[in-house]
Image (cartoon, rainbow, N blue to C red):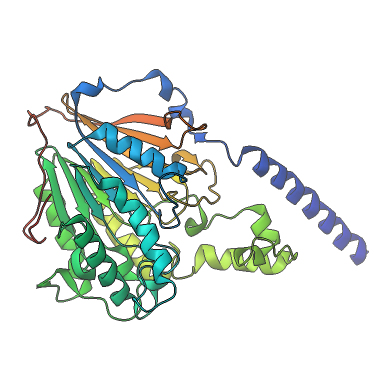
Length: 420
């Protein structure tokens, strides 16, 4: 009798896993749109000549190839040429895989420099602003010596771009620091890796401005948001606050049955019980890069408590290698982390849009006071323009202020001078 029960359970699980796998395989690579976003193609932004400023948000580009070979870099290059001088591009961390920028005597140095140079070559004639921030891989995957890795990367980028504020927050500090575009649009940058990093990490808002304790970060952020109330604020970080992907505790059926594929994609050894245990652990306890990891979970809870008191904030991160967009309590949360890799992203939940594809996001500001979100993916065929896979008006100023003819930007007093 017990044998029959066990056999029935095994058969039921086999049928369920087979059905779930087939459904996942059928829809996995297709973009997901919430019901409220199904008609996104029927709405259009103002004409391009009314665009005041454009912000590209590119995450996790660190395994890129050259411009000639890399479809994503070609799409970014297309945006660079289209956007012109009234624009800003923000790299959302994990700029060099797998371990950031090693010392000069490391055999891994040459490849790391080459990948970074491929990115920086995009901006030889670019007149806009370039901002890099750091991710866990840039901090030597969170290892104790990661501080030296991020300082080395900052030095290389700022010297190549001849711009001391091209890497923010400076010196591995915590932030927040601001980059003001105009009287309606503000970029605010924070260092989320600080909260999970091992080893030395400077307890400073910016160089020379120490915090007494780390919790002072939250009132500092709240004060900045209050100071710039009424503006559309782009809050750029590396780690997402909402995600339907791996770091948010979502897994494929294959990963559930074959957990060793996390280490090697070819390790198809069925370990369903171990896979279930590992899945539960990643979802509720988390590894150091997961949203459920206790130090980050505490950070996430506290920062959301601050953000939920404000409106018109666009929090954008990388880290998960896909494209996602959420609207939660009057604010916007996005994942734009598929600059060079793609990973599974689950459909539904709180997401308005999700797609497992290489790409990046763009925010366009117009003279009528609106800000539009665009999701751009590489062209399907050589010689074609990049694809637009989603767009939406996400901000309308109540009384659109008069914007300058050419949007200007400057770093706040907490960042060193040297703007482009």
